[in-house]
Image (tube, rainbow, N blue to C red):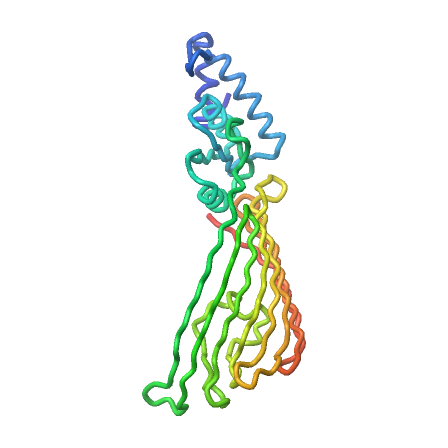
Length: 283
């Protein structure tokens, strides 16, 4: 057997001392030969499910020989075991799984499967005021309001919100501006409102996002759908509506992202459709 780090430890020991005791757990004992055989069978099962070099295999459970078998079986394939503390609550487990994006999760039967958790709710509110400064030729004061609520159950998150970038007198550049805002985080992805219109902007939005249970076919699969209704802040005129959709997944060190935006103009701008395909590779 070739040296594959800790993945070969038990197998090598089994060749020299197959009948020596490898571990004891309660009344259960395993020799190195028995442990090596169990690890080989588990590794074959992992391989059949598509686990390969560079993947992560999550373990959720108490101290048990199965954890060691998972650790060595994954390592023999060049994969890495990601252990999770079984005392963590569902929210913490979900956060770790989302961050680690394992290709496979091994769960101790006593836990009854991965925790789906309870519905979690968050409420966010923001207020700001913007006004002219120093030599700015535009004299104005504009307010900003944001109210957003979200509910999450398992990997599904629903969000509803209202954002108001206020207007002052209706002249150019006298509405609330956000030149340093993160693109595609606010006001849709069609980029119609990178500069706030003179009469301001109100954005009523709904979104639904889903993080799917990791699988080897499409690990770290995430999808989202959002709808925006845009109006002016001053005089309350309809600007238009927009749909945004996104699908992303990771394969080993490469992440693929597909995005689509469709803006249906009413009294601002023109109908716009945009499509993105993005590939990211990490070391």
